[in-house]
Amino acid sequence: MPFQRYQRSGGRLLHELTDRTWPTKSLVRAPIWASVDLRDGNQALSSPMDIERKSRMFELLVRMGFKDIEVGYPSASDADFSFLRTLIEQDRIPDDVTISVFTPAKPELIDRTFEAIEGADRAMVHLCNATACLWREVVFGMSADEVQQMALRSAEHIARRADAVKGTELRFEYSPETFNVTEPEFVLQVSNAVTTLWDASPDRPVTLNLPTTVETDSPNVFADQVEWMHRNLERRDAVILSVHPHNDRGTAVASAELAVMAGADRIEGTLFGNGERTGNVCLATLALNLFSQGVDPQLDFSDIDEIRSTVEFANQLSVPPRHPYGGDLVYTAFSGTHQDAIAKGLAAVERQAAEAGTSTTEVPWDVPYLPIDPKDVGRTYESVVRVNSQSGKGGVAHVLKSAYGLDLPRGMRVELARRVQQVADGDGVELTSRELRAIFAQMYLEFERPALLLKEFRLTEGKDTVAVEALVVDGDGREQRLTGAGPDVSAAYADALGDGGLSVEVTEVSGHVLQDSLGTRYAAYARIVLDGEPRYGAAITGDAESARLGAVTSAVNRAHA
Ligand SMILES: CC(=O)SCCNC(=O)CCNC(=O)[C@H](O)C(C)(C)COP(=O)(O)OP(=O)(O)OC[C@H]1O[C@@H](n2cnc3c(N)ncnc32)[C@H](O)[C@@H]1OP(=O)(O)O
Ligand SMILES: CC(C)C(=O)C(=O)O
Image (cartoon, rainbow, N blue to C red; front, side, top):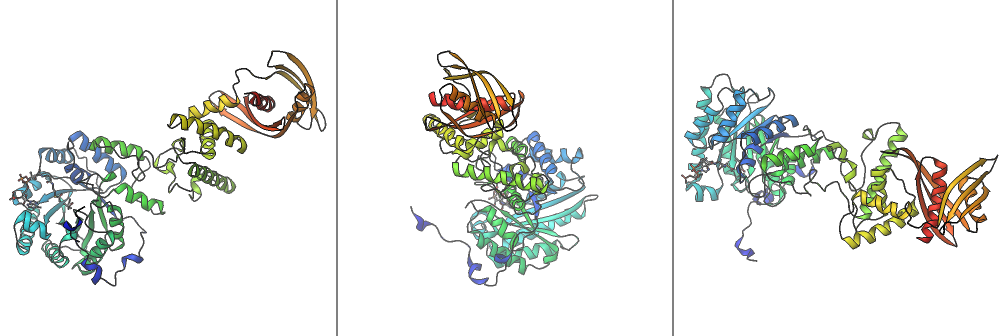
């Protein structure tokens, strides 16, 4: 690999800013969120959004609670221009939402931008020009001074046009492009000059947006750059300090988080991170990271699947299954130990809630392997545990309990999981909850040629004992009437089976009510020792007694299966 072709970028402040404060800060409130899905996200699509796709995205952003929405680059295309006109003319921008429109530093495009926002109640005009050395030299062929003049001429042009606008509350934003590789002193000088020209004041602040247009360094370098700007900017109280991280190194989320610790007030990004190359920072990840730390994200993610499907429709790009918080598989465990821990964690939360006499949403969430409760973002528990050859008894039991209400005893879980693993290993695929239920039924409920069939029985309750009279059929179809007695029904039945020549000891019986589509039934599970061997059996019937006797019968049949 020709690594010597690449040079270290940025990082100078890393040596100079020795009294940085961001490493000791933590995130305690949500920043101002600004969506650039409809502009930066849109410009990166092979098929840019039409009006229908833009509208769906805009409506979603409004529903989620975004107050700052960049709706497009109206001077670039008719689609962007018309969309904005539609929003304004159809009065579709809520009173608490400020739309922003992007413009490069070109007078004719600035003029077109002002035509596009005519009649809006509020709007932010977002001016951007590159300030970084490489862009100055390669793209513009200009000196630093000429680039500063370019920014100032455009800022002035915008201010002049704005002076003539009536009835629109106008604000301004400036982005020095590829901030992170611009010399800090130069970017500070240009930024100060622009905010001064626009006469930024606390009651009419200018948004100064610092983009890592191409992410080049580790997030700590960006944090130093942001803290340095935060400390050195003139009119800091009249500037909303914004960041716009891209994800070229895969660290946009960390860059954004550290930037807020370093003094940024606002973050521009997109839902699920669409954007140029590797994308913009993902606002879903940032917001839900805050949520998972007990901080109000100020955005509504309570139906993340609906959000995701609208974003996928608008972008015509799919969200990967492992994408934080929104991917298909992010609340799913296949591996046995994770499933076991999740099942135990969920049970512990339920127990805690029951003990406190409250609902599970009222007790602190602390479940291994699940940073947030999937239900909080509209996911269900059904998909949390999925079974394949990597799964163990905890996962198998969890699926049967959550999908079918079957609460198997520990020993039976072990035996069933062994069988499930054989099947999963053989097929090499995931097993659905239906398939698990079918394996359970094949093992314990359905016997092709049962060695024992309990045809009918009668119980007589004594003071301390129960007596049973049972009509059973053996594997050859021979009927026998048996009688027995014991401290409970299963012991009495075992005694009766002994009467028929079967030496059965019942060591464990459990059961529970089962509510399903067939109504209220009863499930029972038994562990017996037959001819010195432990066997498990299960039965699901209409009442507790027949289920218990059925479970013992099933365990006997397991010995012959
Ligand atoms: C960092 C960002 O993401 S900025 C936003 C970028 N977004 C987009 O590019 C999407 C929309 N863009 C477009 O549709 C087109 O580029 C248009 C219609 C706006 C302009 O098209 P054209 O006039 O054909 O120019 P072209 O696309 O080739 O852009 C390059 C020109 O813009 C100049 N330029 C680039 N950025 C800027 C800027 N911020 N301000 C002023 N000029 C700029 C370049 O120097 C170059 O000028 P040159 O032709 O004199 O060498
Ligand atoms: C316009 C700016 C903020 C931008 O999109 C970028 O630099 O990535």
